[in-house]
Image (cartoon, rainbow, N blue to C red; front, side, top):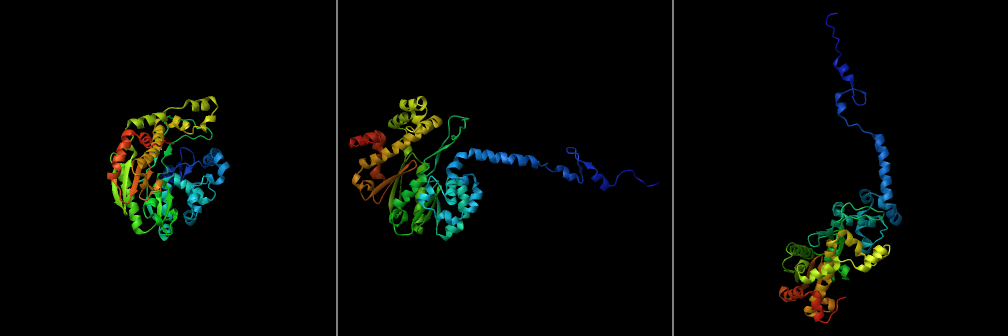
Length: 378
């Protein structure tokens, strides 16, 4: 039979393709490039992961309910932007959130990138409410300490990780704005106008007149410059006020600060006896003991700076004319620490007035200056 061929037709050749892994007959060669999905294994692993997550969150579930295991994107989808915006300051800062909006806000405050996405979503609401978003990150940066000990065990109820310090810097910055820029207009300060400040992580939501918003942005730039160049003091005239700023770093290279740092680097014997010999009962008496063990010199440095801020502020009041300070019942001068930056503002006084007092405190130490004025630090 002439013209007969024993080779299969093209369609028959493709139909005869056999997968070398599973042994199944494949219609098209392209099917061999597909990923083999093991849905049975996935269905087995997913419940295990969910169970592990629930077991790990058992203590949180007991204290706050099942809402703590709801993924943040799902929680955000169920919260109305207006419910989040109407939270009071106390609701936002509460330790035991009750509503979905409060739970969401707590999570957003812990992750800046989540807050950024959320503010993008509620952008139309903020615009309708006349709210301007101002970032306080450059003016009030958050510092983070990380454990010195690697591969720490994860005991039940104990999850050692990074420690955030100065996390109230944005709150201090908000207080500085209220006290120094048109303090009579802020509702937060008992005013009657429409000025209002809400914290949203390291961002501030401001409702105020355009000139006040411009003043706030100028103040952010001023503090950012003080952070970038801590070796010198800074002065600026903003919104009818003279601002004088100096960094804590101006004092940390002195002998008296080194002594203060050493005080916090030592573990008191009483805490050692109570914590190790007394079965851990002393941890309440010395809450920084465990932090010191984890974070070492970094935590001691933080505690020394925190203690010296209060002393430096008080010494500056006594070294200058105490009658001027609003803190002492005066009418002209007030000051506030924003992170590691001391900001003093007045209508009339500036660098020339405060520099001599600052240099004397730096040379002698705040405790010595207070002692000269007959004041014993607490």
